[in-house]
Image 1 (cartoon, rainbow, N blue to C red):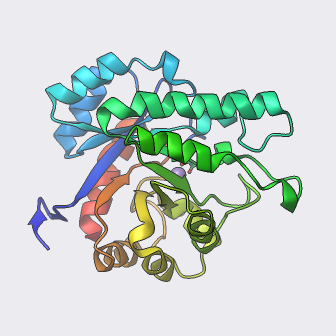
Image 2 (cartoon, helix red, strand yellow):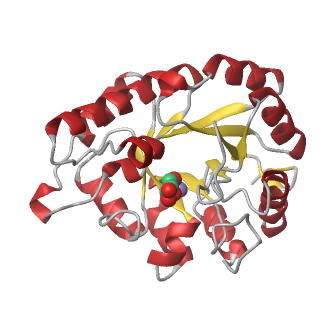
Length: 271
Ligand code: LER
Ligand code: MN
């Protein structure tokens, strides 16, 4: 394994960016994209993950110009704000709402395509009312993304946010059983700490299905600010030869700059 700046070369670190910050929302930076991308680059991040409820309102040209000026990539488009802010859900009872959720996800795929970025499907999958209501349009969406060469990552999310596909095991089985094309699993250490009995085993069992990682500590603060055993997690990632992004999806606390610097220090110290 080749090591660069203290990390295996095939692992890239991503910061998170949104239009505005909230102390209860796990995004670390907001504000002028040029300044924020420059700051993240200076601290050693490789890319930015974008959290906008609607890609139509995303200042993508500005962000892309800043990324190109500072040799940064766009790692992923997160889609959860379309659920949290607008209530769009892939399994909503109202077919107009479901249609709007699919349309929005296609818009994210179209937005991601020029940047070789991944689209994250997390809480927009919605909440189940009954087991037989679990069928969703994910397969068609994954095929749409495949045609545009965009990867999808499907996230295991804790029970307090979504009422199904909470553990890594259930989520990996769902992706495999439905043969979702071009779709991998996203593991988020905050959710894993609630749902997965053995974090290392969960990572090893996912193996090459693993497509993206969110790291926050047990309290969803930056890496190292809680009690998760990060060394154990990073060792498991090395064992499965994980190649991809690890992203700073954590609360901007005690403030954005401290969290941004603390997260990358915490992750590098644990490698
Ligand atoms: C999305 O990546 C996620 O982890 C959700 O908990 C955001 O609320
Ligand atoms: Mn997450």
